[in-house]
Image (cartoon, rainbow, N blue to C red; front, side):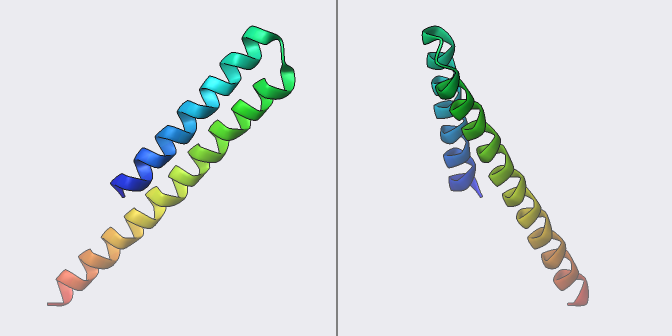
Length: 66
């Protein structure tokens, strides 16, 4: 899912930016929010990867039947 992957990459970058600004300003809350944003984006990407793999298996099984 290329569109989703690009979206997750953007979310991760936004999280890194937030974390960096938090580091520079000494704002622990902003830093933590950035880290959380990155973790959420990684989790979403993992779910999408599992869905893609499941679709691939289903397609493979379908091809074998025909």
